[in-house]
Length: 317
Image 1 (cartoon, rainbow, N blue to C red):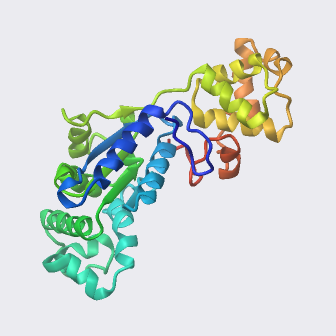
Image 2: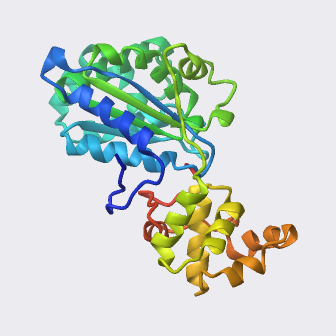
Image 3: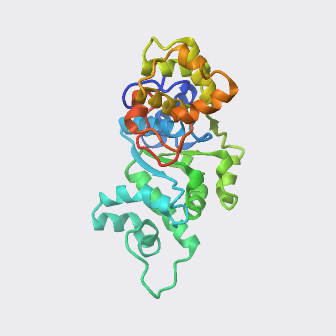
């Protein structure tokens, strides 16, 4: 079954990923109470292979099934900010609560875990809370949210850029997901997980983790993507060259298509053949922008049938 983005366009060659996500979401939504099966779902992918798009689809299908979705994204600029990921996950749901409801959710952990999620600042001159106490408090808070707002789906994208404090907490807590009406979905670049994130490395490398890898698109899928954006008249040579230039990377394929559209180029063999030599292939990405620092806008990505929710400053998929 094809996954589809929020515009109804297909997620090319991501059937296995979408099917795994559907099964996980169905499992957590099935029945009431004891019938619900929580769990973990990991997606590993190099930059540009569509990890963010798959996670966006998971958030959409979970919300459509009535799940409470807590989402966060690691940031290259914010990875040194303690509990930055935790705050993204919890602040939206806590903001919808009254003060009395928040205190009820936190219970006796309000003063200890409150600063970690940004409810209030640590008082100047006071000793910082015990790190293990903060993690225990977060365990309690997320457990309460999972029970009160069940079923709950936590989605963390770009975990390789997550702050170490959040990753350490989530790595320890995630193994409890099967005991709760809670699905934890994590996407990351396997080659960019920092060595200091030891607990997270142990989680994704554990015997029960089994991350789902995303691969480059086949030439056929690239051709379908090109023709879906530039028209059925895009010929075989042009489509094949797009696949060669981008290596089947969906993000770069979208960028290349956007440049072709910007320059009103006809998707014909004449353009592809003029760049068919190795030296010309090296020039074509620079000329058309496939590997340039400019990143596709949401509108250009959507027009190509590969539409991220937001445009990052660097490719995050």
